[in-house]
Length: 229
Length: 80
Image (cartoon, rainbow over all chains, first blue to last red; front, side):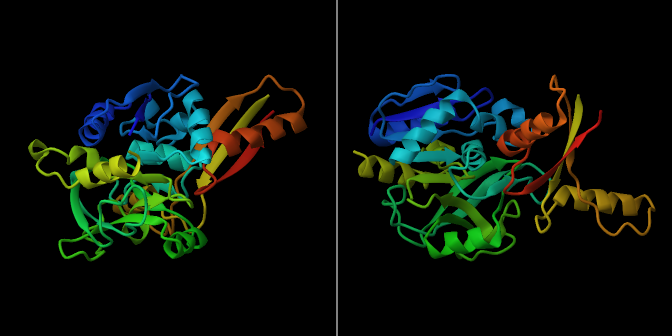
């Protein structure tokens, strides 16, 4: 699996992403700067976490309009898989590559803690190494992770397997306490219609080494490496 | 030409910041505030002198960047 990680001014999780991708695929990802207009031939494009452009205007708003995103959009339309984590998810919604929007956390506080996710659709190239209903504990760290979409969009997502992950408690229930940011229906991650673009707020790349305190995040990267080998 | 763009959350979109402001106003003793919604005002100075063209350009700016139309409405005001 050849991959590229896009670096925006203010990205800060790109090296964590590089480590997780390299661990799973054995290949070093290419780092591509936001001003670049070309991308190498890759099997996966990743938008990492951080605070691109200082979250000015809206989180991800500036980055979504940066030069490299025109090429990311072209590749995504051709079916090249795109993964966005945290700020990367915000950028993908701002770019219109994923439905909905990520708003200020309902608590108005930055949330930095481990959360439990439940895999809602295991029939995608991102989730092939998971089972539907499987739970994983990964960290989240964000200020604007409150997922919102209008009722029609939520229904369409629900009916078409477009919801990738939900925040759940230790028993797998979507409770209010398990929801770190006020996201609608505890949504933590969504797919596009063709299930080739995934965005999620928590950081699976930061749960890939025992020193991280857990390795539940490996399933995502190993599944991708297998699907895109 | 000067312009102001008002960006507000669409009805039905929860506004935790507005709620916090509402709560703080109540704590300060301001009674009778029934709802608070927070938005943004963006001021622009345009070289354009034709109002219709300025409005068309501002509308495109709003749709492409200034507002996220998934969650926000916008209103354009030309001020001179």
